[in-house]
Length: 252
Length: 279
View 1 (cartoon, rainbow over the protein chains, first blue to last red):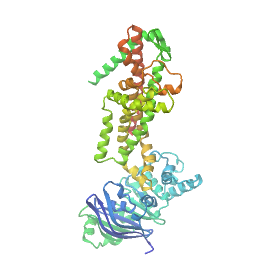
View 2 (view 1 turned 60 degrees about the vertical axis):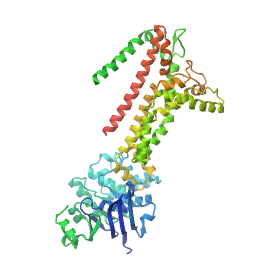
View 3 (view 1 turned 180 degrees about the vertical axis):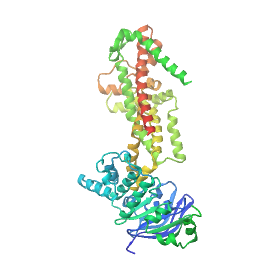
View 4 (view 1 turned 90 degrees about the vertical axis):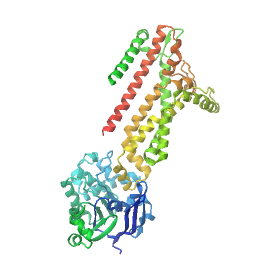
């Protein structure tokens, strides 16, 4: 139990009257890499965005039930605090175009108006970029705009930006779907390294990716969590017929 | 059609230049900083009107910018959808459609008494009409130009950028300040320039409210609160009674100067918008 970092209890999400995530119960352990897969429109991204309370930013979006982060319900906490505490990386790399690489990494501090000394900033930037496997490539151009980087580099910059806030948990919303194969493998390789210090939840519609990077996999279908199991187990011998159908490509 | 329009504009420009020639020849460049405008003595100096035009426009800009930015932020980010938002947006755009003479009436009957009270409190000669009053009306008239462009631009900020900031724990205000503002900065500036272009040329409401004196006051507070004149208002007031060639020509030269100033301001604004929308 003390190893659990995120736990959803009867969690439901809605867009207006549209019930998108249905009664999800799941328990995720520290330092695990979790893949969340399922066909388009199955609620996987919506579920992910419920964990750090990004879901409610969309007009008309509501949710019910509990998401426990270290035993505390995020819906009882301040949303701003929850979002600062949980890292998030999006589908398309979204570095801030008006900021340099350096400023992008510490954007979380800049945005929240947290005062940090120059020396501390340098440490945070170097450590975060190193963790995101980007330091070597950009250390000589830290003060150039982040948008000059390649797509894969931009995505790793966004990962560094999330890491800089020292989260325990990082959410990835289809982080490689906008990247070319080489950039994709560079980001995937990074997941293995990040696992030592962080818990990762990765939404992906790419089954091969789920199989490659994750320890456990959650399969969502029509808003329900159908199956949550060891990744190997799920891909070789799924318990549910619907998982079986998805994995064998009967629907996508 | 557009070629025809271009020809018309070029024609207007040529006419302005041709008709200004007598004045340009006899008064030279000193016309622009001559402080005295006395048609009876045949002395023409445009300086008081240049100052009047720039002053009313810039005061109007200073008053209107906070309002148009606030409207743009509210309707662009806080409340971009729904009937209330649509109603407000249409109302703001309607401000631009009200005839200028109506603003003149509103200014005369509502603003002038208010400004007069204010002037009495401040111990200034209570004219009521003057540069300040004209500026307030101008400010109201130009709000839609800055606001409506601002609303469009703020709604155009890509949502992944905003979400990126929210996901880092930014508040609404921090997102506006650190993501939306930098992203739309040059466009908002262009909106300000366009409203400036509008303010520079506005004639009717200003003529009704500015007090129409040809002399430039010597004390600063009288320059702001006392009566004045703008290039456009002088032309409107005096053109009909201009009875000799040099007088007419001097007025037309005022028009020429005004034409150049507004065209330049508008071109800069349009250029910024084009560059902004291409990125």
